[in-house]
Amino acid sequence: MRSSSPMSELERRVRLVRLYDLYGSLLSPSQRKAFESRYLEDLSLGEMAEEEGVSRAGIQDAVKKAERKLEECEDKLGFLGRVEKVLRLLEEGKDEEAKEVLRDGI
Image 1 (cartoon, rainbow, N blue to C red):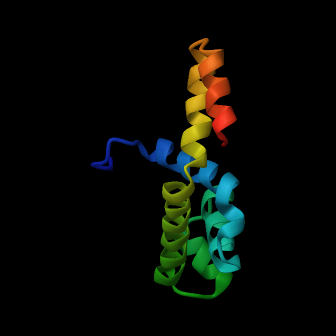
Image 2: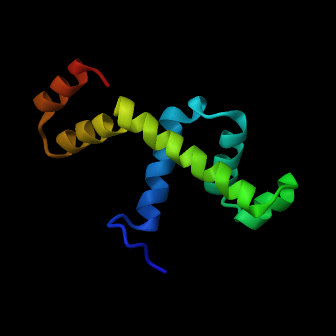
């Protein structure tokens, strides 16, 4: 089933993993474990619930909290957006503009 959002499920997952690379240390240990199991180990919610001995709803809640926290960090800090902007500028051959963004800080 396709999401109504313009971002595909694959794009959403890639974005979340990139956010995790930047902000994962800001998650609680339980959020980190839930995120890693879901997105890095690609376990289903049922597999995660069985492994942890908790309900599927509890696991889903932990994963959603981790996703929200990562998005909140990006909203406040914007590191991923700036990194993507620099990469886009470099791909377009706009090295000086990319340097300017870097000078302003990532």
